[in-house]
Length: 319
Image (tube, rainbow, N blue to C red; front, side, top):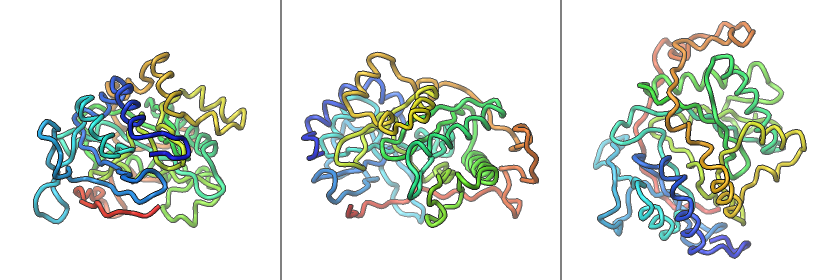
């Protein structure tokens, strides 16, 4: 699967089997998009949303409506270790769950900020942005938790675990991203245009949508010739990496990930249970700043942000 490291499909299966106690609580009940690499990394891959026709009867699936009608998409739900290892066996190197659990498809349990470095920036640049985001969340009296993406970025999770819909979480995330971009224009962008990201970090608020999935905590990544893990870290670790200018400190191979979990347990466990409520209005003045920005619950036209249903798409992609 990772020829440069001699990391085989059996190694992938062993990794997921060993990590099952840590990863399963974060997957259980959530429809999952499988990112499959039949010939290993560096070769063609595809995102599989509909469960394959050969899916065993004992694998749980959950129906998700299509955007334009037609039969529901039957997503795999990884509820147990057997299903997790089966996913590894069909070369699903990456697991991308929704932010909600079935059947409550309109109720996310968290808000996610994907900090994606543009050309000329790296994971340490994303880490600096993570601290800007944390400072704002601290002012809002909200706790958030970082993980490295396993690629080149950092993702910050804001647990909610209280009744809320995407019509509230996505506008909130967008308002936060826009505010940070306004306050730190030399470092942060909230616009998706790649040309604007050079030397900067995109705070991707768009992940907070009913049709979007985000790579799971503890998932392997297939972005590089060697395997690395989307790994939760502490804020102190993130700060040390910045201070030492050491991006390699934020790389976690599978064996290191397994040892960390054995030693420290699941650093993301509070994401599953911490109950928080988003502010009714995003008020950046709590950070000591003034702004004329409106509530994140409204767009410029006064209407809630539109939320689309899940789309099906499993076309092969070339690396």
